[in-house]
Length: 346
Image 1: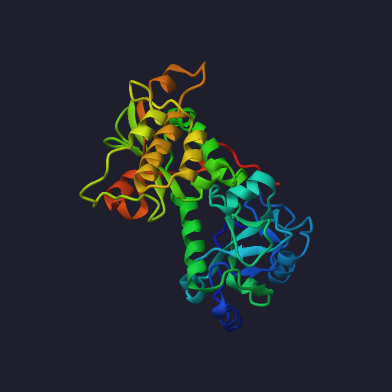
Image 2 (image 1 turned 135 degrees about the horizontal axis):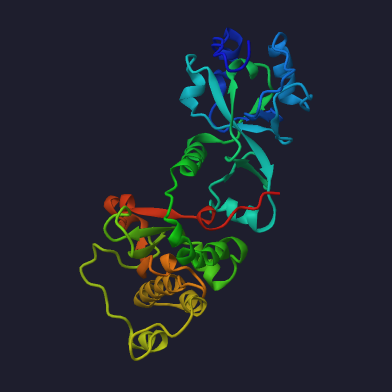
């Protein structure tokens, strides 16, 4: 009987059910090889399968077992805690821990690479790699060494959100990628140059979201808005404030030319933001910074006609997290570095 004959999965044993009772999402397990579906090896012996399988999980895979993705630093349970606890859920999903360095690690730490998720209870350079997920029967884990990967509800929720985000990212139309790629530099600044003026400003930015006027299903050209969502309290004024002071004349002269176009760079605006004293100055500098970041979305020469005609305009808008309405949140899509360029795992 071969693997394609539909052999039913065994029930979860009493020992396995008891052992996994204290597991939660984020549990670190001593599983060093994760099975990968490939052409079935012709000499695979199914008789001693269970014993060989549990041995194979924590040791180097011998040639006669299915191919595996190596996880020398162990694996992490990414199944939801409720699914781990319920006995009628026969399997759990595991993802390997991988080591990253340099900008890859920095970007992953601030959640700019949804493929890689930071975990509190591991080395600083270890991340959960959500690209390589394997399904393991619970019976194979009952005697495997394990420990908690997160501490408490707050860290658990953060992990759950990060795992969910990997599978809910919006597929931006291909012709938009060249337009949005300049924002990669903005996102990377927070990770790679946090002490610069722009990096300092970005520390207050929760995420960038892309909003299209109308519906994403509508044909191009798109009218886009880059929503720069900042932490509550960063903007001195919000949408519920009845009166917002006018932009100070000194600031207008610094920022804009006679046609009210920005005449200084995002970096220069961020420098002014660091030393700004008054609430009106901080407010209008933040608005100008969002405008400057969006203005970087321009094309390089040589793009195809379909790319050149994909966008009508791109504006920037800075909005406080507590002012972002649910309607705008649902109508926009988060932007991260995995949208714009391929990650570089080590």
